[in-house]
Image 1 (cartoon, rainbow, N blue to C red):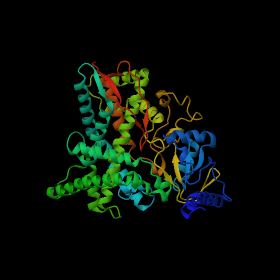
Image 2 (spheres, one colour):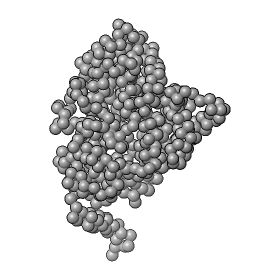
Image 3 (tube, helix red, strand yellow):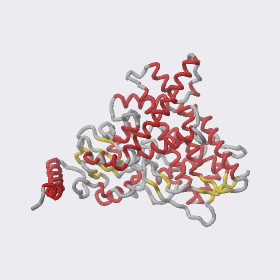
Image 4 (cartoon, rainbow, N blue to C red):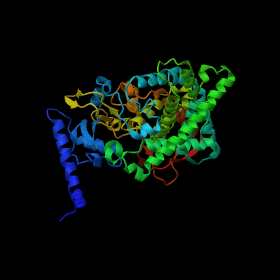
Amino acid sequence: MLSLPLLYFYFLPLFFFIFYLFKYFSSSSGKNFPPSPPTLPILGNLHQLGLFPYRSLHSLAQKYGPLMLLHFGSQPVLVVSSAFAAREIMKIHDLVFSSRPKLSLARRLLYDSKDVAFSPYGEYWRQVRSICVLHLLSNKRVQSFRSVMEEETALMIDNIRSRSPSSSLINMTDMLVSLTNNIVCRVALGRKCDGAGEGKSFSELLARLVELLGVSNVGDCIPWLAWINSITGLNAKVDKVAKEMDEFLGGVVEERMKRCKQENGDSKQEQTQDFVNILLEIQRENATGFSFQSDTVKALLLDMLGAGTDTTSTALLWTMTELLRHPQVLKKLQNEVREIARGKPNVTDDDLDKMHYLKAVIKEALRMRAPVPLLVPREAIQDVRVVGYDIAAGTQVLINAWAIARDPLTWEDPEEFRPERFLNNSIDLKGHDFEFIPFGAGRRGCPGILFAMNVNELALANVVHSFDLSLPCGEDLDMGEVNGLAIHKKTPLIVVATPYSC
């Protein structure tokens, strides 16, 4: 005769299976849901995500269509894989899909999601978004940081040149990460966060935080399994990073407040202010109409630091990788840049508007290698009907920008790296053309597009202007990927950099 514990062991899975079937069929009656792959009890479709979810979801979409309804544990998830479907979500029904799901790791790492990227839709989000768009990342503000971008780019070029008097192996991954760290830290905090001592510690801490934001958390999908994070050590890692980051940012803010008091209001001109100064000024004036606490200041700084460094350096790295895969494109780009910047030691911001092929190269790299291929997830705030399908409130939405940018119905030869496709056409990356949305679109589009593109264009133009680049003799280019919040290159990009002389 079976003991009571054994009875629980044998019948508990059956109970969950029956409960799942009852919940599924009772909720689906009378509704026209999007097509769905078969699910497993408890897991739903989690087992089908694979190592690189954007690729796995693309394969599923080939069979089930551009709008699929999956279940990650108990969480319904709408997967969008075509420009037409993305337009429905991000333009026609943009307001309905303008919220964010409550992700526990983002909540714990970003001050209860008080940042602009992960904050749920509402008055608070509208206020902080307005602060970012009008005060931190406006065209005027980005232009005020031109000198910082140019100085740091010139320092990187000098650093590469000092290591390659004739030609030498250069770790471009380290160079580009250091460049974006230095630019963003100077712009956000008024000082560098790279090199030795405290700067190096902060750069490493920021990298750990960004890595944790990209971790898949089983507790968000299957809440009753959240305890697993304590066993694996994930909770301890998150708590440690959150505490260390809060101490660092708290120290920065406190030191700046003391300095402002000592200066007795004798602040710098607006065009030279960094983000800390701007945010503290907004807080002092209390002009936003809502409670602007210190946690909001630190959360917005984290957004600028994390997104500005990680995704920007990732985009630059993949762009350079594609150029090395396609030497004829690299040569054409070098010819354009060197012709326009002829006789100048460095490319400046004033030169960039004339470099149309440069812009096309970066767009094509973003098309093929969007740093965040599934964008940041959205959530429906009410029931809605999309392309004839019923979508329930609380459904998460994943927009597969990677799949959309490789759709053969939209793009000719989508697997080919061909920058010329962006010459003489009006497709941009600001969210107006839904076949190309590496920065998202609609209310939840990334507000930092202008800043990121300025850094990308200036850095890439100066590297190809100053050096002839090639792979080390006999080595193949490793295109392996590492999954996370952004898709990183698996191995460092090592190049031979030969200084170019006019």
